[in-house]
Image 1 (cartoon, rainbow, N blue to C red):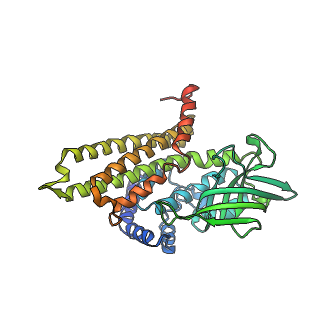
Image 2: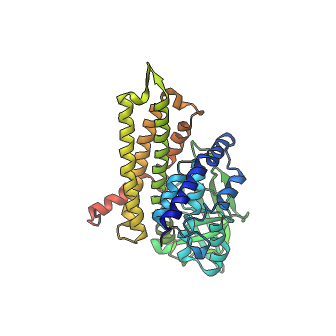
Length: 384
């Protein structure tokens, strides 16, 4: 399925106009207040930007993944918290839908796609990685799981309605002990929610530390079967999400480059615009090539995911690895083009520079991505 060229072009133009107009006003408000205005969430919902990627039977607009990423590219030129809302809500349904029962689909997934229910992806721990070594556990007694452990860096973990949470059955080893639970954020006994939202960038997005001490969770909260947890978390969410983060790095790099070009054309030193100086021209040329190369790899990874290709996971990690390193180089040069002025908050490049740093660890650090890619290279499964 695809959206016809004319409709898709109109949608891209609409989103671009919103990002440059109301989106920039919201960005300034978020930076000033440190929180996302309720009106912003309502506007993203009413415009359909929270339901771009989900299929029509879930209430979404059914835009295929590769085309959706082109929209994410544009949205990512806006404030990072705006991008984060669109990215997360357009992604969590992918993890839930293949494993959900009818009740979960009607009561959680469809309201999430509609923007009425917020689900927070809840995997990372302070004392473990983001895979089979997690230490949060559940103990089953009758129709209840008792949840123990701690999560951190949980985006939207404070204000969400549900935590899509990974845990291990107490005493188990291997992937068969992994479970995914849809835990309501509703004041459950033994659940402590700590607001940990003071971050360098991505201001306005709430982040949580979660602590659970014999927190009762009904077994009906289980997503899929016991043992499906790793598939839910890694294949269902992280694989496509890494590609989406990679494209968001491309979009933000494009915004940094745009700001650098605008400044270079405006700023004069010793009777010349910066744009006339070869050193600045070299920065901008390198940025262009860097962005174009990363974007091409992201699109290749997106098509691999769409086609369920054997190398989809490899390309997902490779695209994220390449794109976030590219973003670091591009934003650094864009800030340098601004000289000292870029260091001041009155200039948008200062915000872009801070926001860019978050993507270095979002959905797994580059060190993790390199391990995934290296394994495929060494065992001969990596293809070109």
